[in-house]
Length: 65
Image 1 (tube, rainbow, N blue to C red):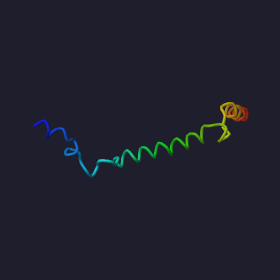
Image 2: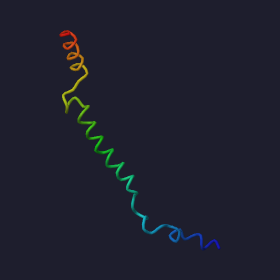
Image 3: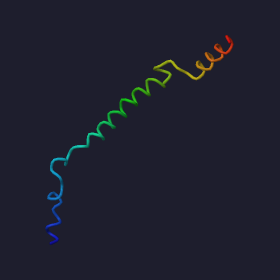
């Protein structure tokens, strides 16, 4: 009886043994794409955006009103 349970290969599903579900792959690649976008959009060295520059622009807009 114990010898029958020692072979785990008999209990594994052969068609999904080495592949990830599609949802995990979509999540994985989606997070990578989002990370690249986030890095580009919110890193001042790449986008040129800075909090100080945004503040100065908001002050200029406030002065015009």
